Picture 1 (cartoon, rainbow, N blue to C red):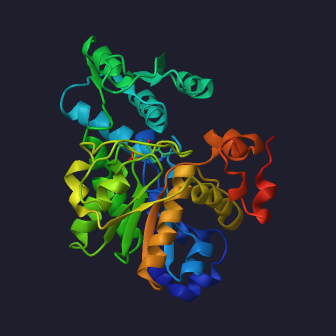
Picture 2 (picture 1 turned 180 degrees about the horizontal axis):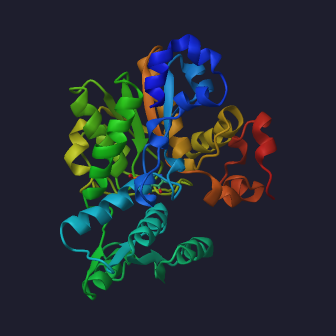
Length: 371
Ligand SMILES: Cc1ncc(COP(=O)(O)O)c(C=O)c1O
């Protein structure tokens, strides 16, 4: 209706009508009404990072996944693993979803399950903070913190989650690491959104992996739609084996070391990553020093309050842009905000305990506001 009237009256009339109606043309399709929380997942903005773009002579763009209802990129995977279980007839009204997770997937699942009327049971290592347990409980989940033991121990939280689901009728273990409905979320949503938002003008995509769903699914879509033109670079934190896997042409080393980043880093090739591992054009190892500095830079230069995995992704995008040279368009993922990590990321004591205090440049020290 409004479009028609613009066409009828032309731009002069539109200019004359400056005021309330003129704003309507700026409202995007994604901001129309949607039916329930699940339809509010995805369709996130693609933000051009101004200073990093200027610095590299490229367009460095971040997909604002912190704008999802649950606050992270994992809402997409949560929705797709639940939808997949419904479609396969594994989950019927009133059923129970069980997952092993300490982080964003649990939060995404909690929102999706409440919205669809399912119960949610979460198993997590008992090394996790009380804050995470409380948050999941207040979002309606039943939470079991269990001893933190290795994956090959039957008491590992993932195996306990599987057994819990097996012990109930009308229940499913969503198994985010190896359930490829996770990757499918990004083939069907994240990838197409990035392609549409850039008008196909994208030269490279880069991000880190936890389950691998985001990287693999988005890469698969962008490679297919561009007939291989878009390059894909895997970004890896310390303590993850994927960078050395790519660099060595497929050797899996033992995991060593660790990182301050959460939700990313991997010791194996998950089922989500496996189908797309041959599409990887290169990989980058990003130090915690660079990631923490970028947390502060994004806040200061872009006004973006990001978690460390997002900051690592921005460092990777900057390095990919520098590698490709001026004039390229590089996209990455802003996975979540800093809210859940603020007590650590902006604390003097915590930074010192991780030997990261000196990674914060002088002019950014004002953001270290916690003791
Ligand atoms: C903060 C954060 N960043 C990145 C990721 C990685 O996403 P994916 O599991 O799709 O590889 C996760 C996954 O849990 C996460 O919580």
